[in-house]
Image 1 (cartoon, helix red, strand yellow):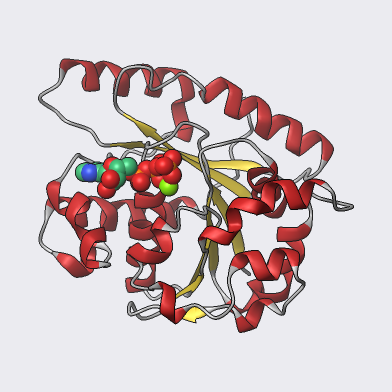
Image 2 (image 1 turned 135 degrees about the horizontal axis):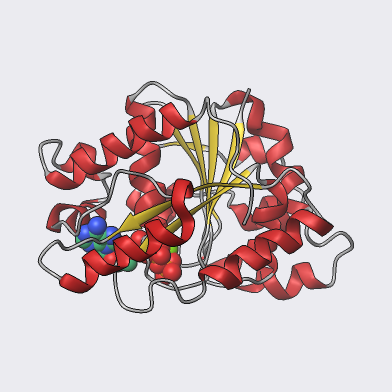
Length: 261
Ligand SMILES: Nc1ncnc2c1ncn2[C@@H]1O[C@H](COP(=O)(O)OP(=O)(O)OP(=O)(O)O)[C@@H](O)[C@H]1O
Ligand SMILES: [Mg+2]
């Protein structure tokens, strides 16, 4: 059975795209069949997974708003088992255009329903906002995966995001739960980073993964050559972190979903 997971945090630059690219790639290497949906007009996930503008004939914008068959938009990426529904800058207009449609929160769910059975996991990389595109992602998902940056103000916005998840659960998607919280960009030399780890573990307990993603230069460089870090430098600390995260993610699949607190 396939599972749909939104990777979301309305705070910008916390590692949503990095998590989407690298967790997906590591799961693909563990022989899971993965679809990534890039729901951000910045298209960083699309680029980082090895797809350039010229490869894209049909984008997520076209399938969301022009009712084009989602299967025609899905591209194979250079990583085996990893597929992409790409985004382009056209998606910038989607927030406003979706707002005028009926059942404006359900467009993405209809798209995913056409294709999800072909995959083990579908990941949606959300943009840094809680607008209609993110509402579509949360309405279409089984769970939400939340990256948090190990820096000052890390917890700012987490309660707002949880509140949004609760509202979506109550109004649009009763099955929605939290997949987990990932601590990202950790630098052990910073006392503050250690304090954030403790605070987050205290506050969200079991939701948080034991695996922490460290700040690592290879993770930062890999998108510039359009590769996940596990392909770019398999021996790097960043690659090991994401492979450990993928293994922990798989182990947690047999657990009961965590309640939203
Ligand atoms: N563990 C890491 N080590 C080094 N650099 C990182 C790490 N995680 C993310 N980065 C870098 O930090 C920047 C922000 O990360 P990313 O794009 O994943 O965040 P985001 O939450 O998707 O941002 P946005 O909200 O704009 O979509 C990127 O340049 C990325 O390469
Ligand atoms: Mg992003």
